[in-house]
Image 1 (cartoon, one colour):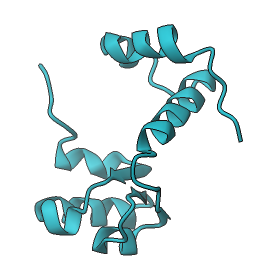
Image 2 (cartoon, rainbow, N blue to C red):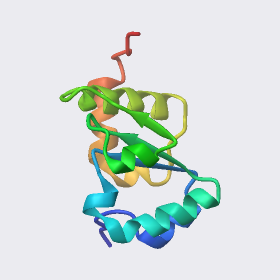
Image 3 (cartoon, one colour):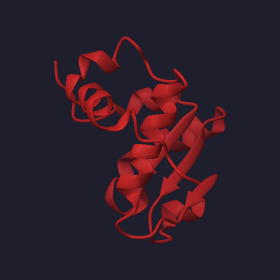
Amino acid sequence: MASDGTEPEQFAHSRYIIAWASNIHANNVHLWPFISDARRNGAKLVVIDPYRTRTAACADWYLPINPGTDGALALGMMHVIISEGLHDAITLPAIPSALMIYEKEFRSIRPSG
């Protein structure tokens, strides 16, 4: 069965929560109590957003990226996650487009730094 996101109750099992261009305090207020509970249990909140929102102000780690650079960040993260074996090897193949695009287009590209 397809899902449109993480069920709020699943945040209790999180170690890291990434809010990517999402001001949860303004746009998803019903989710905040679940994130607060997860953080009390040790989860870290990472906010990736060019704007310092209320959610960013609450984050354990705020990444103020420049507008239009999030694609490069996503590809860099995908590279590290897959090349270092940090992905869920059972779930990722179930999303064939993600793995296929990575294998076909991006595996040979090395991030520069």
